[in-house]
Length: 509
Image (cartoon, rainbow, N blue to C red; front, side, top):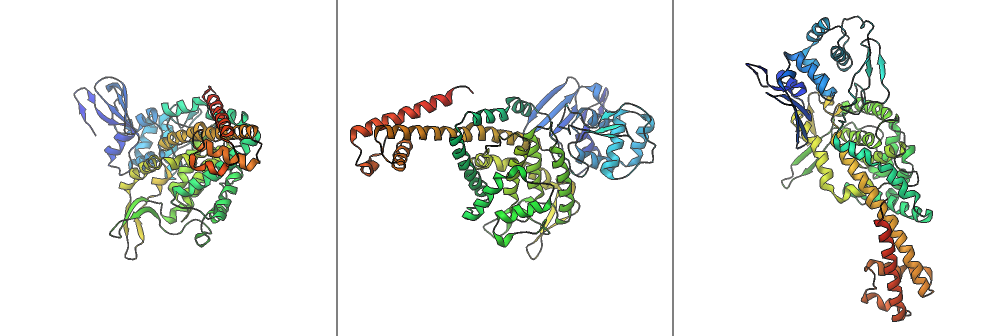
């Protein structure tokens, strides 16, 4: 932490300043503030936002850093809990004696009590105006706040003290929100022929299922694939407040030998076996004793995310990625995590009832991007977890680690998910509808030239389409009854059908 010079404080302030001043071993925030000689400036690099403030913002003492953080930075419950625990009650009590109705002092007091579970020996705040706990200009908040009489606080935290991710307001998220992707999807669905739409969606359910299993390196047996498709068709009806619902879903999609009856009771991790047969750990999951409480907090968050007014894609990212980080089951967590994306989008009305957005298919095409965003979280918590394998090859984790999973920055995951959803709508859904339109038109044109059986006409049209408008010479003998002149006319008609659909797709939506 930098020092004061002859003109005042210079250096890290806010949460980053507090972490260094108090010597805290916790993940650093994505937003890091510094006091510089002159000027106000924002820079961003490698996922870190560097906020520079002029000398006039410089704090006088440790409470000054805390006040700065509460005023200018996104509210991060995990850092606040560690800071308040390190400070203890006396600095907070002294601050409240100096500013008994101060807005930031009251926020710190309320956070101290809910995060540390310790009531300070203070009377309720005398009548004064209520203040928001979290600045809605800086981060996504609960649309309906809870009024807290004791400190005169509007508690609009996205989650609760038990579990609360942070989603910062970024230019990227604002831009995605303005695009109105849900309207794009709805317009696409409403413009499709109903019979074409049914076939497109049926195919996308199968594609999504295969892709979700493929991401886990699995090729499911037909019965398991069918059960997952069935679950996806009822995704909106899934009850994430019921632990038994997760058990039923897990039992339906994993090998029966690995079906579970409840949350896991063993320590698990994500890793790989090296050539020397040692395990390389990529991600250490929460300790099994912490899972029930963390899942209760997660369920409280998901219930809050169901409230109208929260961006559906941000809500889906917080719920789905939060679930996979908790890894509450021994097997099936990844597939359920991606299933939850569909559940949250369907429940919010973002996904049209008649459709499915093949998000897993998009993810599967670029596994590196998916792995990178997951690895970002893993890297942030890994330095703060002490773990080792025992003689039996079981991973053991030492110390208290629950808060690493309880409070996390979901912003990059919301940005990532928005990009995948956009591709699922603008490429996968659109292309499947376009292909079926093209195929149907090609079949109609084929039958118009030669009145052949539908199945045979479909095969010929498909072969011509697959070969970009002509029948491959190796396939010509399979249609000996069709004359060369007729085949030329069919190929020309199919080419026109291809061009027609392609021109329609190029029209602005």
